[in-house]
Amino acid sequence: MHESFLRYAESLHPSFERLTTMVGVTIPTLPKDAPSQAIYLFSESDRHLYVGRTKNLKQRLRQHSIPGSQQNQAVFAFRLAREATGRMIAAYTIQGSRTAMTADEEFATAFTEAKRRVRAMQVRYVEETDPLRQALLEIYASIVLQTPYNDFHTH
Image (cartoon, rainbow, N blue to C red; front, side, top):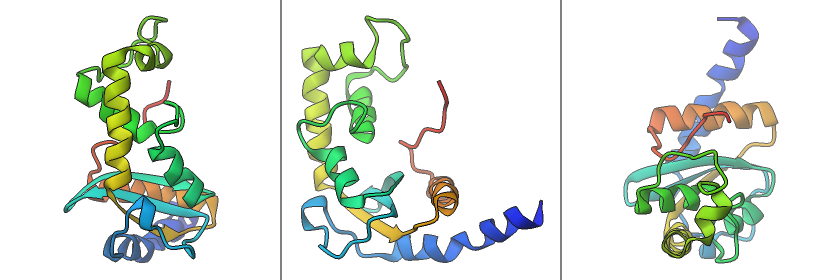
């Protein structure tokens, strides 16, 4: 492994430890002094579900959970709604598009419920201002925690 990458990789674990040992909060109880640039982790009970990264933590968590968030803002809730409705495989057609799915009453209800569910989840976070470390830490945490809703597929 190249030395410059190895340095980055070896520096991730202390941040990972801070992330996973933080006492979880909910989106409504997020402290006012929470950092802006961060890695965040959604969990239910002891089950870690989704890791994300952001330049604006409060705004991003809000986007994941408010009723008016669209499918491109509340991506975690969208995945939960896909699972709830059995529509796990993306269809690259007009009828199977995300827009069409959110117009479907059954899916729209599941999506709204998923955003409500996300709002009630425990969230943990660790400040990370460097974009490269953010990207690597997100991947590192999702691999180690085996978060089932992280998806690194490309379109």
